Length: 60
Image 1: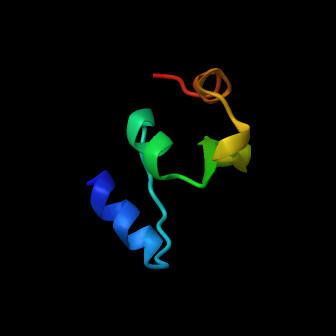
Image 2 (image 1 turned 30 degrees about the horizontal axis):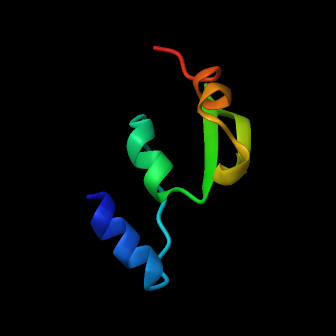
């Protein structure tokens, strides 16, 4: 699935992805937004975030 998204992205397409699979997100996202109970708690370009910052906001 990531390969298809990357090909479409290179062709100019944009996507809104709702996903908890960080491996996929790392491969395709330009920007990451994390919400908690309907509120944005983190929003930044993917290149400015590290995995620990993202994981700190994810709860199971």
